[in-house]
Image (cartoon, rainbow, N blue to C red):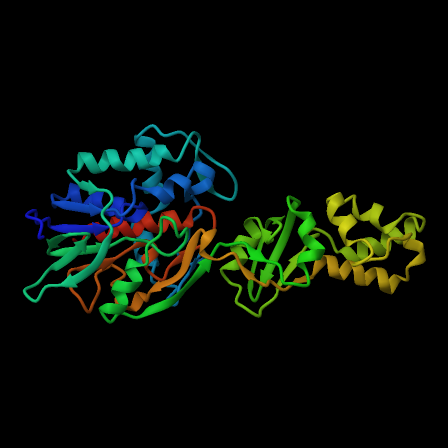
Length: 396
């Protein structure tokens, strides 16, 4: 049946970008209806940052930390709504926060504080948020505007904003943005899991899976991209911030190069130590700089478990080179099940970088993770959500 209420704008998705857009559209005097398929608003916000929500990054730069077929697309929105703007909102609500590392801002207490702030603002702006409303179709009306079908109800509005996110975390994700884009003739950059752990290949798994839980500071590189943060061995493969970052640049068939001693020319150090104390065992020497379990696993494979003096300088230099340039060939990734975001999405050429309106369908908008804009790990994707939502609201 058709719903009697006819809002000015329907926003599909009560996530970060959708709620932000709803708040500011409501404050502009528009009648706003938000439709959320889940049982709660802001589900991805609630689970982010280990439950403390890495809500922005003070160093967010649209020219540096974002991936897109059109890397300039996000500059306009992020220049108009900066991290300082969202921080001001957080501070105005008395939410305590701290910088963890590399400009990443987290709530001191819980991510629920951010969701509560957004819902409080929605209420103040007169926004109608409805849960358990899974949208099955968005259809343009011949007379103008759109029909939005959810269950046995059809809503109508002059404007519709797709803020339904991407495919990461399947239990709370939606493919509506991509289904709608395909049905309406919009190009979609093929989506894939990003900021995701990479898995062992069949040869490496029996060698390294016993290292699950071992972490260390390292540098991971793939192509021209390189990240220096911690890496984490798991039963399934490699995780940790550096590996999650590099996963956005990795493609099937490519290798990831890992420097296990990024502050050290390992070959030169090993040769030097060999000259100083040829009686020292290689494993004992490496344990000065690497986790014991890692060294014990590599012994006999990467290097002979013997005294440095019994190994030729050339051989020990080869060991050092491997430590600085471990070639890791992933078998794959863990996919959307554990991915933090979706790479790809609705091609930005279909959308105005100023208004976020779809050129082929006036009155239809797309924001946030639904678009082909993906940030690095560390609060950048939330900042994109806030910025795209805020900017879109100014033009509804």
